[in-house]
Length: 379
Ligand SMILES: *Cc1c(COP(=O)(O)O)cnc(C)c1O
Image (tube, rainbow, N blue to C red; front, side, top):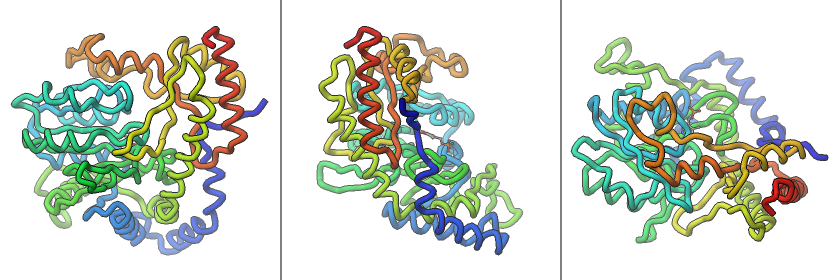
C-alpha cells in the first residue's frame, strides 16, 4: 500500500532550497525583518506578473479581504453579496465590519457564485460583491462587472485560490483574476498556489486612491508616522516570507501548469467512472486547480473513509455552507435557501493535488477510488 500526501510542500522546497537559504541568510544578516527591501521587491514583482498597478502585501488572505472592505468605506448594515460556498474568511470579514452577507447560490458546474442569480439579490443597501474564484476556477467576472457597473457596486475578488489564473472577456481582453474588480485579494498560506512558509497575503488594485487607503489601513490607519486619520489594523508581510515568495513567483506558471497536468490525468483516469463527476472547465477562465474536487453522488463519507484506509488522504471543502453555520445563524438564513451549495456540501471530495504529484501516485489514487466506490456498493 502506498501512503499518498494531500500536499507536498517539502519536495517543492528542496528544489529551490539553495535560493531560499541565500535570501534567508541575507535577511538574517541585515536583521531587517519588517518592511525590509524584499517586501517591496516582491510587491513590485507580483504587480508586474499580474499586470496590476498596485500590490499591497499584508499579513494573510483574511486581512487582505478585511483591508479591501475597510477601504470601501461601507456603513454598518450595508449589504455585501457573496457565495455561501467558500472558506469562512470571505464572510467572516463582512460580519466583523457590521455588514450583512447576502448570499447567492453557486453554479452547479463551477462551484462559483451563479451570476444569473445576483441581480435579484441587489437592494438599495447593496454596496459590494465579493466573487470567489473557488478551487482555482475563475468566477463569471464579465457578468459580475456588468452588474457592478449598472448598480454602482464595488467588486472585491477573493483570489486566494486562483493566483495566476487568466480570465478572458468576450472582447478578447485577458486579465489575471484578482485584477479585474476594483480590488482583488489573495493569500500566500503555504498550500495556496503561491504559498510562503508562514502567513501572508496581498490586496491588488489599479486604483491609486484605493491603494493608498489600503496601505494606510494596513499600517494602523497612519497618514504618516504617528499621525492617524482613520482606524486601521496592523497587517504586514514579513521579510522572510517575502523572500520565499520572491523565490517562488518565477515558478508560479510552472507550478500552475503542473496542477493542470495532474488535473488532466485525473480526468482521463476517472471520467468514465459512474457515480462521480469530475470538475468541469470553461474557455473563459483558465482553471489552475488549487483543488481537484469531485462530486461523489452517494455515500461520500464512506468513500472517503475507505480511501483513507488505502493510504489516500482526501478533504472536504466545505462540509457545511456558511449560511447554515451557527456563527452566522443570526442573519436568519434557512436550510433549503441555497440548494446547490447545500447538495454539494454532501458530495464534494477533493483529491490530493500539488505540484509534485507523480503519475504513479495518481494511478494508485484512481484505482483506490474505483475500488472504494465498489466497496460501498456505488460502482
Ligand atoms: C485561504 C483562503 C482565504 C484566507 O487566507 P488566509 O491567508 O488563510 O487568511 C480566504 N479566502 C479563500 C477563498 C481562501 O481559500
